[in-house]
Length: 274
Ligand SMILES: [Fe+2]
Ligand SMILES: [Fe+2]
Image (cartoon, rainbow, N blue to C red; front, top):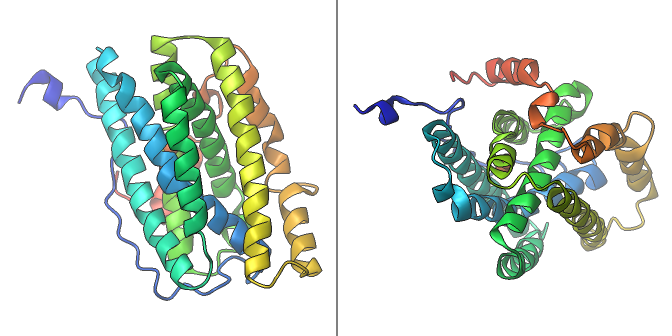
């Protein structure tokens, strides 16, 4: 075995194969709004993660460090597995009348357009911005047991927690690659503003469409509960404002947001060996 082959990434690629056939219609808190919010996020992952992987493949040949190369390979492996499992769930949801396939196709077109018009540096900057978003959400999902405990289906809870652990494990890979190659603060900050703005509009639009399609558009109780749960006092998203905004600090690094304890806790709970 060569010295290079002996080098290992700091995190593994876990092969998963969830079966969704028993997932109930409202698998989060038995509630339409919150279930649709998470299904809406899920609809963005397969194409979004393909964009992340492509933006890393675009530049990986410029990285000479063999350790970073291993990290990049493991990052690609994890994201590919996330795409596969979320696509399987999205297909299941679409078959059962929660039509997320339309969102999947629409965001795919948007991201393909991004590949066409953005430079490799800009694509990687968008990826870093969205990876900070996913890592921040992941840490929050692990931290907020009151939230992840509301997933009333064991398969969905396992899938989201597995994804959260791995987003946390690989949260620095894209950022370290970007810093190694470019170290361009204005581009990464602008990419953040644009990526988050588009994401906020897309998620709001998808939420309204899913609620309407499900005949829940005027379910005031579910809207009120969901909006409070996300944006109210100690809301799931409200609490993310500061860690998300920290990305604009010039000296920011993903590891400044410590999440090793949470990773260890959920790896043990999910019975992951590595
Ligand atoms: Fe992912
Ligand atoms: Fe990721």
